[in-house]
Each structure stands twice: as structure tokens, then as C-alpha cells.
Image (tube, rainbow, N blue to C red):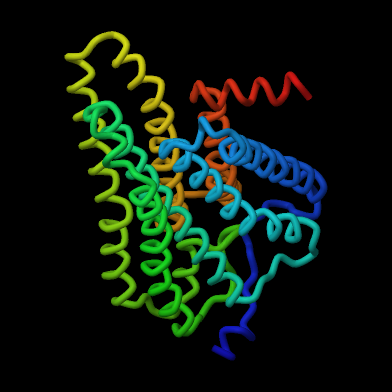
Length: 304
């Protein structure tokens, strides 16, 4: 571990930092403030108003807390880098950023799965909702949504800390899967465990979400207009967030795996999208599309 702590890597993903330094800083700082303010505002509203103390809104608050943690692990370092002559960081800090990035990312899929199940019970089994979605059930969903990814991602992070590096220039602006390009040899254990993690943390939750929303679609198709309206109002935002995050996952994999097909500028644009869209997209979707949250937002700003 002493060798890891003493190793520094260069972040080589920026384009003409010295020329656009202050433009980068203003844009990134503005985005970070917007992300923190928008996410914290909705989390505050959910905490403040008792009519939002329902499983669906609690899961939304958990998603938004994820966005705050995720952005705080990324943006301060980005701001320091654009103001620095050299964009470097300790490899140990890089591994920590890698850990937070994929733990929070995996947690998103599990939280969206919990939200899909909540909507399924609410729409398809309304009479049993209060019995099934008790406070204990919600707490267990939150606990495992954060614990399972934390344990899973800890394994490759620890293994990566023991692997020798042959390259110290990272082709990116933050530490994601690109760290594997620095290693002298790719660990077979990481390859196998990586497939297991993708199946366990991404594929299975997505399949579960598709299954539950298919069931909801079938039930609502044969139901009255009021039920269909309720399903559309509460399910559509979750599906939009899922699609957005799945696209960002594709961006992340592409940036790390298909490096030869991308110029430095294209790679920078892709990596900025990974840290930009989702943390801003979540509060925008839930703030505008969720009727109760939108109502409290209007009251907050109109009374200010």
C-alpha cells in the first residue's frame, strides 16, 4: 500500500487547459452549484413535508442523495485540475474516486428496482400496499441498495491497489474503468468478477424493472382511466431516469473500451456527459414530473 500511496498519475483528458482554464472553471463550478442546490432542495422538501414521507418519495430522496455524493466525489477535483498547471492525483485517491463512482452508480440501479417494486405494489396490489411497503421494508431496501454495491465494488478496488502499473498517464478527467489501461497486465480475477458485478448489479435489476413495468402495463391496460393516469404520472419519471442512466453507463463503457476510435476532444465530451447529465437530470425530472413535489416546489419559490 505504501507504493500505491506514493504513486501519482497524470490526468490527460483535458483539451487545451491553459487556453480555456477559466471557461472550464466557470462552467464546472456553475454546474456543481446547480446540482447541489437542485438536489438538496428536493431532498429538503421530502424531509420537511409529511405527505411526502411515503416509500416512493423516500426512494427519490435516496437517489438525489446519491447524486450529491457522486458529484462531490467528482467536481471539486475537476475544479482543482482546471486551475492547476499539472493535472495529477495520487493513485490511492484515484482508486477512492473509482470506488465512489461505481458504488453510487450500481446503487442507482438497485434503488430504481426498489422504486419499480413500490409502483408495482401500489398499482397492482393497492389493498396490500400498506402491509407490504412498511417502514421496515423501505429501510431494508435502502440498506441493501447501498451495502451490496459497496461490498461488490470494494473487491476490484482492493485488487487494483495491488496490481503493478506500467503507465502513469490516464486518458480521462476522472478515474473510472480507464485505470485498467494503466496496469501492466489485466487481472483475470477482475475480468471474471467484473462480469459477475455487471450481471448482479446492472443486468438483474434492469430485468426486474422491465418485468415489473410490464406487469404494471398489463394491469393498467385493462383498468380505468384514473389508474392509467396514476401509473403514467408515477412510473414515467422512473423510466426516464433509468434510460438516462443506462445511456451514461454505455458512454462509460465506450470511453474505457473503444479508446482508439475517439479523439481527445470526443473523449472529453463523453466523459463530461457522464458527470453532467444524470445529477442534473434527476431533480429536473422528479421536480417537474412528480405532482406532489412540483406543488411544494412552486409554493417554496412563490412564497420566497
